[in-house]
Image 1 (cartoon, rainbow, N blue to C red):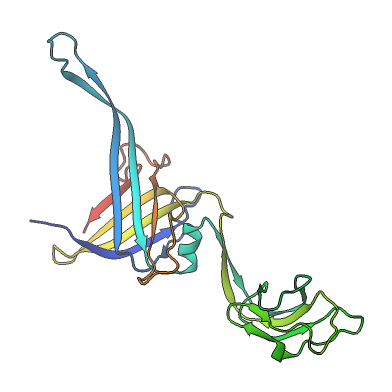
Image 2: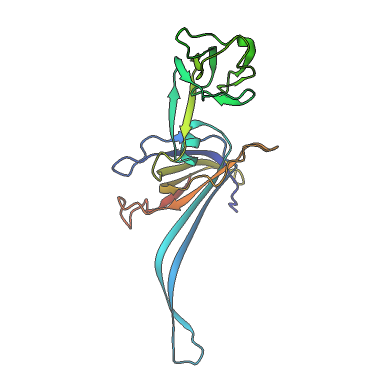
Amino acid sequence: MAYFSGQGRVYIGARDIDGNPAGLTFVGNVPELKVSLSVDTIEHQEAQSGQRLTDLQLIKTKKGEFACTLEELIATNLALALYGSTTTITPGTVTGELLPNPVTPGSLYPLAMQNVSAVQIHDSDATPKLLPAGQYSVNAKHGSLVIQDASTGGPYTEPFTVDYAYGAAQSTAMFTQPLPERWIRFEGLNTADGNREVVIDLYRVAINPAKELSIITDELLKFELSGQVLADLTKPVGGDLGQFGRLVLL
């Protein structure tokens, strides 16, 4: 008997104007993947027998739901989960980034960039004075600083400005993109049937934003992507591919 227990690789990507996959990206380890199908129906009860028996059922709509659990915090996964766009930041320098006026000693001030180095803080005097490095601390990787002493060696004319260099990073902004419709493909193995190969294609999935990202936890981060499997009207109703997806046993 061909029982099923699946493992494999999940790929997600955009569709081209013809409804075909425009290059799919591997999303990393996926411990759970589900597809749920349902129909909404209209039922009719006869009114002759005294039992109100259902004598007709019509399918009104067909629906598909998709859900998978992602574990890898990579840019492509974040872009889907956050409805975001990812920017690759190349190394550069910043000159004259303003700090709030006045600064509060002991407070944390985020900089515009991360991976910072060669940080210098000047005041706004006509002849700018350099704030000694011993009077502030820098969280270089995170791109922030704390000024412990803004008076010794002064007086200083605020606002202070910051010069620094920054390194490479990837930044994903939240809710900058419309609802993503993606082609989803599972290339898997049936571990209950001698690792027999299986392919599942979902042609058009409207993906919801992640319900939550558990940032501080004792467990490894997992986040769920879910969405509705939409009909792909570029494919014929009675065709071999169907309009929602297909499962291929190899």
